[in-house]
Length: 157
Image (tube, rainbow, N blue to C red; front, side, top):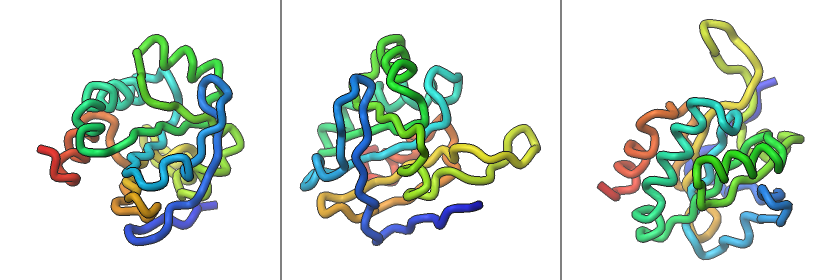
């Protein structure tokens, strides 16, 4: 069943999820800050690694512009720990194995993969302002080149 998609101007759904070390991270922890929240299908897969490393390589400039980056997947803590260590990812990776937050953001549903329609995680990114309102809701983003196009959208280039 397709989840409703979120639009710019709507409040970002609140959440609390464990990070790779089991610490609980809430969207509310970042109140007053700008957040880039991205959903990816699976840790340590080629596309997700490309995307995560792209965020890592652009993190300093995103942080300089006032953004915090959070990654969310359905992976468990062990997979997230391994992914973060292997790729030197300095931002929080959050675990949502029950897909509750994926559903709240409309990032789990039908997608096309190798010409077939399957159920899965829809690679998506949300930019949330200091008041917790979605500024950009980007669904079906490409792993390669996504951060560059996001930077352009945010006026950082």
